[in-house]
Image (cartoon, rainbow, N blue to C red; front, top):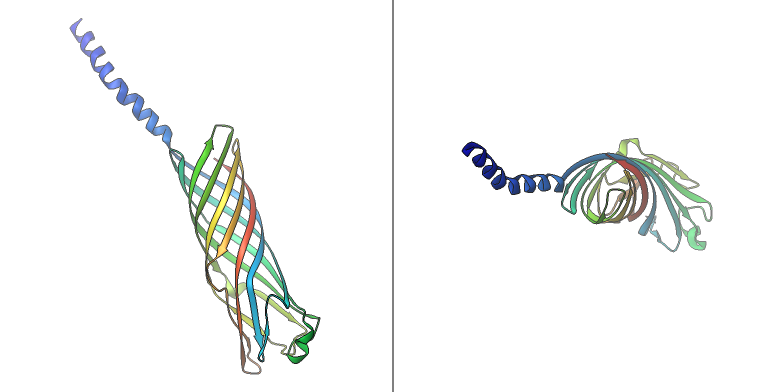
Length: 232
């Protein structure tokens, strides 16, 4: 009888610790998943200078569309989480030069286009907060740095109707962004709305090796993206 009372006393003493331990386990979660997305890009004051003539945002019509796929890993602590991804991306850029004064330059007026296709690998480190975290519905905000590595050796460049027929753009391989976003989760399906702010120049220069000439180019980009995925 004494042994039973001792056992019950020990159990009652340990019960709060057991409950607390179980509660703490619920506050730590490790999840993984995959998502695919669509991107639209805007450039911050793109500039090209060819033979002393400058083309800027007033004389360049630019557009970009991109696609991404990303496996990701997330560690959640209470209402906060830390997430990293390995993103593979494809982007198509287009620059159309339209300015009445281009007759001064080595761009043929009204018909010169630069098209660029790039492949990249991106790695963000995101800090998030779940302000709604229910079993079947959740919403979160997140922010953090993103590193992009452009596979420059696989880029495809086409300059059409330029007087230099061998123009090539030298691209920065490493680009930095700051990301902010909103996530919506329904069961284990989620939707992310993200805006990335470019932190550095993504272009080095234009070059015509045949003619031994090098021209200035400059631009950074901001990216608006939407993705849908599943989390486990």
